Length: 121
Image 1: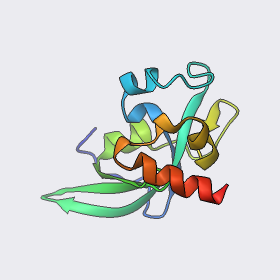
Image 2: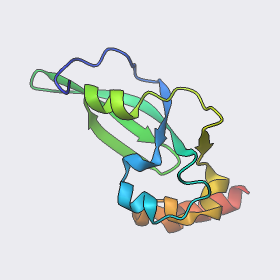
Image 3: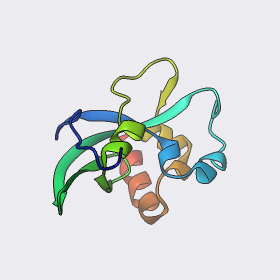
């Protein structure tokens, strides 16, 4: 599956990424509300292609976390990039959520992002 071409997404498409993508162990330590009842998701966008040898990978940008996730293959898109719309089973992680639960933010830029989010609120 990893070697199959990516055909079901395009640059500019948006989706919602389950926080568990980043690390299940980390997720378990966050103590989020309804952590095992709802799926906590963050908005992402497919931003560009990268060709390596004969395989084409897609890059993902998580704007809220200021993260670029590179080289997703077909399996990554299938497994993590298919939530296109929010449902009642989803909890959106946005700036307000991050202010309430700052540990969801990446360590490397948590302080900067919290300052930015608090000035917007």
